[in-house]
Amino acid sequence: MDQVLQFIDKNKNKLIKLTMQLISIPTDNPPGKNYDKITDFIEKYCKRLALDTKRIITPKSELKKYKINAGSERINLIARWDVDAQRTLHINSHYDVVPATSSWKTDPFKPVLKRGKLYGRGAEDMKANIAAVLIAIEALGACGIKPKCNIELSFTPDEETGGRTGFGYLVRKNIIKPDYAISEGYCNDYISCGNKGIAWFNIEIKGRSCHGSEPYKGINAFEKMIFVANEFLLLKKSIEKRKTCFSTKSQKNRFSTMMMGGEVWGGQKTNIVPDRMCFTIDRRFLPEENIEDVKKEISNLIRKLKKKDKYLDIEAHLMSEEDSVVSDEKSILFKEFKKSAKNILGKKPKCALLSGATDIRFLIRKGIPCLGYSADGAGSAHSDNEFVYIKSLINTTKIFADIISNLK
Image 1 (cartoon, rainbow, N blue to C red):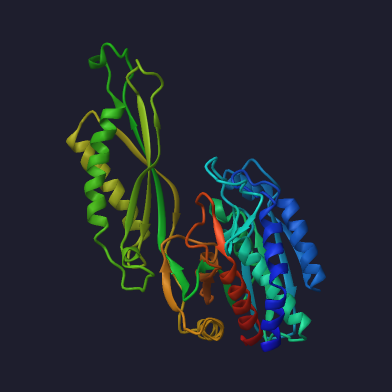
Image 2: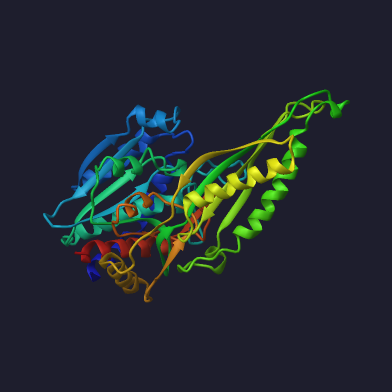
């Protein structure tokens, strides 16, 4: 492996340039921009590495099912290095990024290299990983080293909007059926072994409008919402005492969470009593919890509130749900990946449950050993001035090269 690691060191500028080229293609989602442009770029690179490529277009019927009606054609690019092995390692990367705000210090799609950091939207999440896996494969090929597993890569859209019309589609249709899989996750000396569950609700409160000078003639949905939100805060306190037995990166991540007010809307005009108010709830629950119980908690509280206030007109709309997933840490994938990380970093990484969800959950549900690992950007993903550390980008490339060459 020494020659492979030396190749990566010698070609670090190529690695940085590739990451910058990927960042420079704006793939904001929503709505899903330039998916054709980035898949063209990645496919050309894969072909230069002698990988076999295939494009899978997510049909419009699937997009309609998940209310996607704007942006690019949803292109899933698959690239394979087939060595006639019995097993296949799949490495997934999503190429879409969240939109950038106007608060960036630089143009988010004109990457800037400064003091060991590469800035740009998608630097950490997750265009650095795309570059890392491509250069890792290039290094192995240049050094004449064949993997012991078939290697299958996927570059997919729409992870930032749930993944069901990207990687989720590939898994649902059995287009990919690997023995092991790797995607994004923790970094440095932590790897991800799964994630908490998700339930998103829209809480809708209806009132009755009237002139603002005579508010007693109506029912103020905003005032009703304050009452409802205070009751939900009591539930939140109870929920956030629950603790998982699974390992997490920080103590705070061991608990269930309920975040209220990510979106709030309603009302029409200053002098009209609001007849409708809505707020959202983002509920993240533990593997020890059940999705049906999570939903019942919300519906039971709403029934209780209606009994307290006979004039309360309230409904909870479930917008999205994803059960928690945990992969088997005892599998050979985890053992070999820990060895690879230790070979490069000098220390063995720990496994931890992610608080957020990634596309790899679709394969974990099928019982396939899966883990998550990413180049380090100090948790700047989705934030203003997102970046990735160059040192971590290089180390992550080396780790990918090591696991690709050693996993059987």
